[in-house]
Image (cartoon, rainbow, N blue to C red):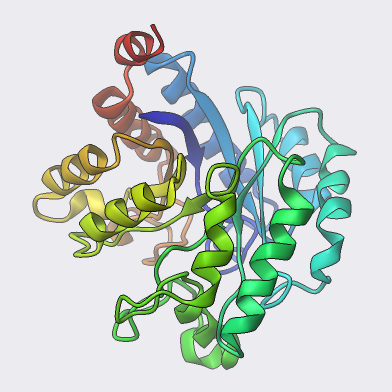
Length: 304
């Protein structure tokens, strides 16, 4: 079932929100307000999560609070990849959480934490174990990113792609399972933590890995999953059919569903990270998805 709805993904990351169009996050703040209200109108009891910060930045929270964007937000989320992209050591995880607690009393979820096997698979396994030691018990939800490596013929969702050098190629080695389906050492390091540390796994449009992912997650004992329903994908042929198959396959997990990615024809600029020209369209999409997959009556029936 859906346990939470996340609004956007890494909005303070230049790869996922357009800083040239919205340098002060005013447009983003308005979109958050509209989306959260739309979600709560359909299901008042569903938790709304502010898309995970990357980098972890208390000033970002303070700014959105000043814009009035957090009134119907229930949870703040953070993302951290200290061995790959962040400019702080892995041992600073507790202090990074405290930085956000210092500016907000809302619960904090770690909706993406991970390490690539780009340099060495043994380093990834160590990083997983150390992340569990530092985070389990410190946050109500933790999602390790990710279950699968990204296939090399696909593209990572960043702005500059190969121009980022090794930072780009690390995107392809974040999984516990290699592209060929074989497990990495980190998979066994993850297994003892599967109940306390869920997974974040994005599924592409008509992703052929969906069934295999469900099999692996059940075998590992995963309870909590974070994934996405893309606003941009909703304009593809058979989008609802794909969304239905995805959500039906994931019905046995407690899912945090992330709504993000602007359709090119609706953005101020033709890019997935662009601010939408009319944020009401994004809010409508969020409401439609919650009405379809987590309406209040259905959620009450599950809870009862």
